Length: 207
Image (cartoon, rainbow, N blue to C red; front, side, top):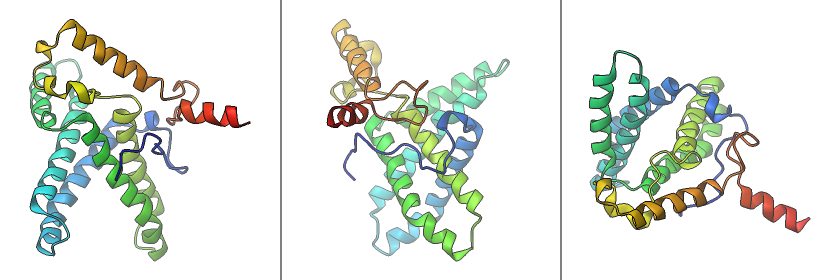
């Protein structure tokens, strides 16, 4: 899947992403991680996936799960546990670029958007359950893509393991890249579902 700068953030039936509870997002990521660990060995055995790709996909979801789970520990009295979990999450995230995190979530969202309607037609799954599973993963993607959680410019990837080595010029590159990324979206107070400013501008010129 190529990196689509206009990837649709939320399905029509999904709730606004910032209204989806963080605990529910973390729970869905844990469910997806369990499913991958359970089913990927069979895909490898059937030649549908390489072991390397399977391990990487599992590791990325595990890293995203660990990263967001830290937020649930940010309560008074749990500072030490949160700090330890933050260090462990950062270690899991370190091997992957920000774009890899976003792309991994998109691959799973694309699969669900394609196959959930078929699953609904069989009547084996509750429509509410399938909708919730999709919107929770879409909300996770929204946090990383639209809000820029863990954002890191590709040209500064080599500094992710040690940001303290960045120079003033490197920090300026980071700030400018992040500012450019945020201008890609209509302000979230006006479009809380992740609408793209450049799309709106294009439609305005066409009119």
